Structure formats: structure tokens, C-alpha cells
Length: 86
Image 1 (spheres, rainbow, N blue to C red):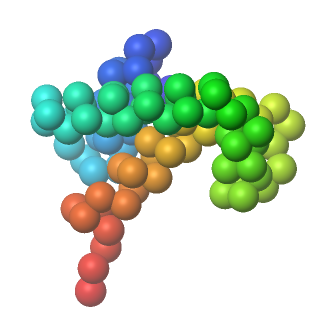
Image 2: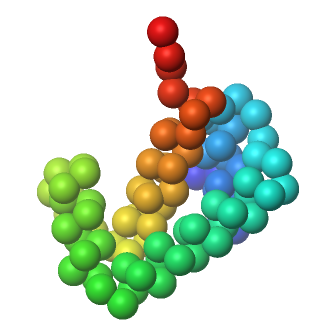
């Protein structure tokens, strides 16, 4: 969802989670994070599978891309402004 480019997908996820678009530096940082996670999971696909199974249960087709996007989602959902505080 959200488009075909990494930045478009990050913008979409950010908007869905935080009800605003990311600032330029936030987008740059999260894009670099996605690329770093993707490269790390490419080097160790077994780690990508373990990450997905641990966090999402058994998936029919675990992949490096899914694991990298799951990492990005965790970052967005754990941002200070996205956590409900009492």
C-alpha cells in the first residue's frame, strides 16, 4: 500500500499512524533505516524469517522485503508521538 517507491510507502505509513506527513529529515532517516534493514536481511535471509515468525507468526512466504517493512512499521508505531500516554 501507499505507492511504488520506498518514500511513498513510508509517507503513507507515517500518515496512517501519526495523522501527518513526515518532515524531510524524518523521511530521509527512515528511508536510510529501511535500506539498512533490507541489506542486513539480504545478507542473512534466515534472520528475516526468524524476525517475521517471532513477531507475526508463521507466514506462507517470509521475505527480506516483508522483514524490512516490518522493521519500519515498528519504528513508526514506537515513536514518542504515536504512543498513547495516560
